[in-house]
Each structure stands twice: as structure tokens, then as C-alpha cells.
Image (cartoon, rainbow, N blue to C red; front, top):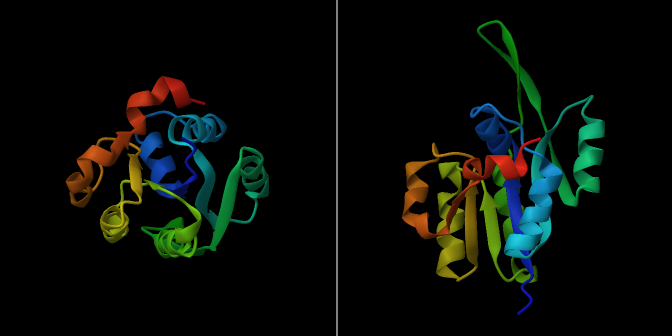
Amino acid sequence: MFMNNYAFIDSQNLNLGVLSQGWKLDFAKFRVYLEDKYQITKAFLFIGDVKGNESLYKYLKRAGYVVILKPTREHRINKKRVTKGNVDAELVLHCMIEYSNYDKATIVSGDGDFYCLAEYLESKKKLDKIIVPNRKYSSLLRKYAGHIVNVGLMKEKFRK
């Protein structure tokens, strides 16, 4: 049976979670996996809009993602320049805007801020998976253990 499933990806959470384990994710391989394994027909990837990263955004689009850019801001923490582009609100908003267009949704993030989204999607029988980057994901999401997939356990499949 054909399913029309969408993925909503917090790229910063995914990328930093994978990097914390000492490897880099091949986003093109990951996109193919989402389509093959979970019948993801559209994968929305939420990422901060940083000047100079235009080639990255083009690569992600060629790999099959719908790239949603979030304006970023810079600030200093302990004399270190940090770029911040929190995408949580955009991810939730797009998930709800697209709600009638998909059968099931997959959230790619280990961030507990998405607990209410997971709760709502599950109550409507529309939550498929929550793909977390590593074992260190929010304890709030443990309630959805039956939906959780740890991408860190598939390092060899997705390593760049």
C-alpha cells in the first residue's frame, strides 16, 4: 500500500547529534533511506540561513529536500561568535500547514520541544517515527519509545 509520508527535520539537532559521535552524516544517503524505509515523499529540512552556505543549500535541494531557511543571528558567548537559528517553531508550523497533505509524519530531532507535536500527531494516528541522532535525546520523548529510531546506530549506512 502506497503511503504519502512527510519528514520534518531539525537539521541542527541532527547534524550536531551526529557530529558529537565523531562522524558526519551523508544527507543524500539519509534522504534515500527516508524514502525507501518510511515512504517519505517530502522531506522538509529546516536550517539556519547563513551567508556563505549557499552551496550547502543547493546540495540539500538536489538531494531531494525541501529546504526551509530560517534567518539567523550572531551573538558572543565567552568571546566566541555563535550563530543561532532556532527552527523549532518553523518545523511545527510547517508540519501543521502540511497536515492534510500527508498520511504519516516523521520528526527528525531528539529535542524535547517537539513533545507537544509528537503528542498531537500520535493522538491523530499520524505519527510514524521520531528519528533521533543519538542515544542522548530528551527524556520527554521516551513516552514514544515505540516510534523512536536512533540514526547513530546506523552510522556505517549514513557516514559521509
